[in-house]
Length: 135
Picture (spheres, helix red, strand yellow):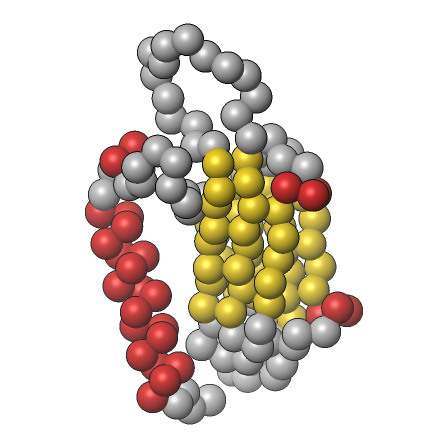
């Protein structure tokens, strides 16, 4: 499938951002209070794409999914469970989070083409491709 110049530019931008963000140690990536990006895995099969987002400690009302034909956004808020007097070590991120996944091919954006489950701290999203991949 041929990509338009706009799709190609968006894909390149997303890949460059991903490479640079991986080069920075996790604890230095974001200032406290800013939007953080949870670890996200993406893999594909012949007819679907799986997106797995690590967002432990949330309830269903703490996050939302937005899907267009080529972009998935997972956004929400993880609340800090307790007041603290002094931090001795802080590696768990709290506050607003957002992860954006760009796909180089169109996806079906109907409710029956999306399957999402949240279990053991992982949000698993299965998205059906508009056209299955051909070998």
